[in-house]
Image (tube, rainbow, N blue to C red; front, side):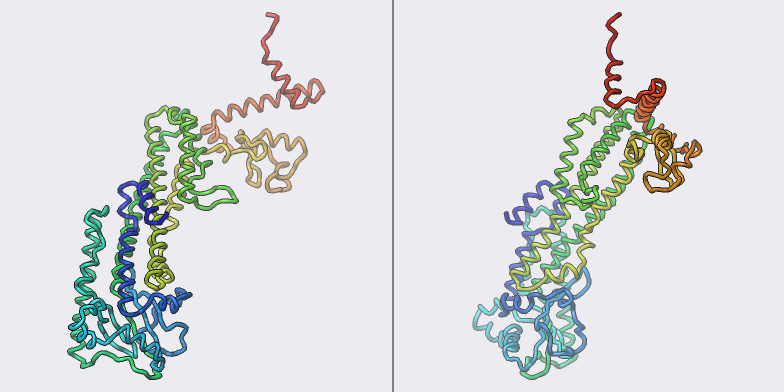
Length: 525
């Protein structure tokens, strides 16, 4: 499937309010055709530009000092494609550096630049030459000649790439008008400056001479300028919308956190346990990022949607929504699900725009022979527009602010028995164990900590090591787990007392049979 069709299909899965901020891939493709036509009209082939620019890196394409002379004629490439100006007002340029003694280069540039007078004379006799608009000379300095490709009145009218039925609506019209105004101001200003220079300095068009001196010609591409102006406008609109959305999502996370503190408080024991199970499933789903040691990477958009679907199905299968007794809890769950959907949308739009950017730049390079895909991403600093860490930061904020409101039993489990550390004993090494496991360790003459191997941590532990504040916290948030822990501790203590009285040891299987036997009904009565 072609990317244009894929983009159109996937955009249907995105909310309507987000669609205007997707890069208009089809519109940009139309401008690429004009860029290629502009270059070919001046006698430069795509193959020639590919040969000169192939393999160039971003450092090779950085704009050189255009105010000073070229120091060395032994340059790696005689053609350089780069961007001038500051973001977002950038100007694509082609820089030709040549020696006057090389006839093939001077002939190529003669064809590219042409003779203004000859073209004017020919245009009166042959209308076909109007298809090749001449280059407008701007200035010369230190053997560097500056030109810009002119846009005829017909070409200027063709700059409009938006249809009347465009999905962008008013936004598209505003951007379109801005583009017209941008080119009108630039063309008018450049013309005034050139007229003033011609009035002040009597200097004609520079001629390419056949000598050994190194010359440089810099050409600004008007149609390429229109392409990148539209592209920068699309990027700015998308980045601006991303910033607004991220600020709103952060505010929604803070608001939901305040609601969760109330609806999932220990005072609402039934809802608290349901919320704990919901967040446990949410963490197991690993929707946006892996949490295991072997995989902590961000999920792809498709994987994110799959995991979110699994999480939703688990909620339905276990009927957790209906188990929430408080109406405010159900409303908070709806807001929680909406926040996750918002994060998925942000991630999806980022992925589509980034892919569209890569595809359109490759298409631009293929059709025009230039190498914008090499230097444009670094020149404009894509991270400022796509913000690759945005989704990761928002997901981390949601997990940190929401899932930590309700503590999980695993976070307060004894490292030995893996149950809640009831009557927690904090050793001198700061590790916490339940009192039952610590007593067993002391009976077995274990002196060192099982976690860090502190030599006397277990041996010196006593009732003074009881963490009273942690015990109150566990009693508040884990009443069911502590009740079960007390039953198990009492059962173990009863078995030890029974073994001490009878002098016999019982295996776990024997104890299990004894427990089953005690549950049988009496047959005598």
